[in-house]
Length: 226
Image (cartoon, rainbow, N blue to C red; front, side):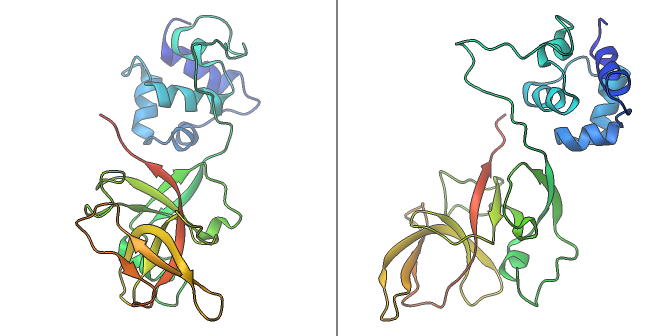
């Protein structure tokens, strides 16, 4: 099998007990179905690194064999001192992408989960999957660590710890993304905290001065590098 298309078809149709559909591979890799069609037709001669690793993992074949045809499909992945990465065996799960208004209404009667901004996939495994969603960073208040267009995954089922990055609401419909910093405790033993922007040009908000509701804690950060 000299081509990627031949090896991919073999891994999808011959090796597994049940043929794997292109849409299932697309979902597992995190690409659109036309990309899989291009691989299978031979229009795309190669897969890039992340897509190759995810495809090999999903198809349970050796990534070097899938990319080059060298070795056998069921060879164990070679390990060397040069490599500093490993293949994740966690399954991908679909989560909604919300805008900051929907995030501000999350877990309230104001947002019923219908018509999210979009959908994406994550390998993050939370205790309550229905409490996990994604947001796209807007504005420069968390620059340079978080830039506009970055994707973040939020788990609304866990409580923030000092230093956590959180999505919070300050009496408005729209949510905000900031760092959580504990400043003390009130007379009832409850944490007093600030929402701190990483960009010093933006203001800090304190729970002493504002009625702040923590919606969820950031658990994943993703950025495209070109």
